[in-house]
Image (cartoon, rainbow, N blue to C red; front, side, top):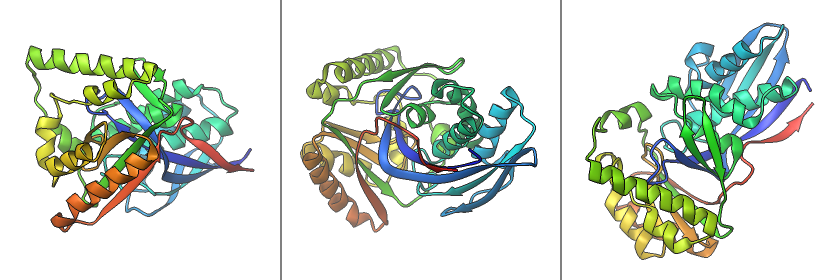
Length: 309
């Protein structure tokens, strides 16, 4: 192969109780990327459609992530990248992660797969570090592996794939305002009360257990964030109304997608997820802010190849 075209899906990170460690992959919402070999060494970002983002390699998450891979696996040629952004920057559904993961996945394919998908996470994290200042993996991991993922450690990294109950659907409402991850991190406290930490650990452990046992009731009881959400909710217009609308309509739980401003809700069954979306949309209409609504199953595959030549 000399050229590859990819679909790079959006993702939801944190999932209420799993700040920086938990995430899941969305379906049909994402970017498309074309990556091709070139005689010129290094990485060139030729164009980006759909968003006004930097083309300079060292200022672009795809470029930085790709260079990290090439540093670990040097070759005598380079790569050109074109990106069609279907995920808005600062949307809270993994815009930077899709680009970073897409770059390393595509380059790895064109090199004959010297790295596994799990091994690619460490390179994609370099792009996330450029975007937010922190090399976190809770978005890039589900994009590369699909489904739900748990980041036990970001240092190696050590990532565990989790099962997904078959009837689980996500509803995502994205207000068309930008909230930078770095700004959303700035409002967080450096220290938390021990009792809050214990409550959060319990919710995270219970959610992981619920995914393994297909316990939808336990999923709902576990989608509670007592550490991050109380601080970030003030940055999101209509947060409490959106959450209440989702729960009252039958959602298992609802919270902030990543650093926001997008809100997510998880439901048992597509029909409920659609009703939840209608309720959240109606609730948000009074804020006079444009928004997008997505109803999505959990994507078990993650990033995938559209075509190659």
